[in-house]
Image (tube, rainbow over all chains, first blue to last red):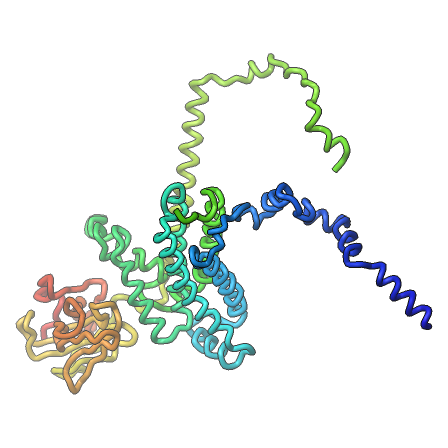
Length: 274
Length: 195
């Protein structure tokens, strides 16, 4: 028996971490996933960056100043991290939340009081607040360091659209708890769409769009109606905001984020101090 | 990766025999008809894209709304006392019916239909019977019983809707026609039901 134990120990000793690692790295499965192998030279590191769908969005080389917290505040990275947190927690919330007049409010309440880890909704909510703050600070940093200047002017514009999308995500998520605050906040907020030029029934130019005596842009055919799916904030609005919040806006934001990160690379990496 | 595959790029492939020219020459399209075909194709493509975009936009505007209709019957005039603000239709139709002994704009006694939508930012004010005023809980806008604003951030009076008699003698309110005091529209006969 002792002899056998010794032999097993010997065998395990022969299995040094180096050898196991070598065996794994030479296996077909590993090589089919990681084409380049261990990135132990500049050339291999470059190939790793070029060969990965995720890494190729990122600059191959980052300036020393680019990872200095006092220069970037890491606000872009924190924003992206919060977006991932919100996507994950939001996905979990979707398992319990039903966007109907009957269930919306009680489902939100039950998410806090009946569902295990009732803090999930609070993480989503506070994460959303934090993301809005982080996005503004990121914009402030980019402005103060002059990083919007050529050749980065296109990426600045992508960033502005991403800022608007972040605010719209906040706005659409605001309605979902379906309490008094939500309903009236969205009533007030969506009234702004009435003033859309030509597309809002109280906006400039809308009165010109007439067919004889009948106004073409009225309260059942304008931008606000398209947003709410009705003349006031009701069940159709709740459903539309839910779909926009969970699918539409995150999808667009995801595409634009890929472009945003890719353009950092194409425009010469994170800007450096002048 | 096969051996042949890995060595292929380093050794240039032998030149391929040039393709036979005779059939290509036969298939050549005259420039004039090529341009006209391309114009037709691009026009058709653009038209189909525009049609698809229009149809998709139209999809967002349903044909049937599960909302109260803009025109509704609101009972008989004698169901409302003189000086009373009738709140029966506030919840469903967003309208107050007010019966007055004398209206400053119509110069008569009768009933007017007041919108319950605050002209500041669109909340619903409350009728305070003791203080004889409409008070919005959102930002504190206040209106007299007539609908004219006197306090808070609101820039203009509440709106009135078209009001008339239905065939059976009931009050008929038409919310698709609104009258604004600041535009001088309250003197319009359709904005007031004389009794």
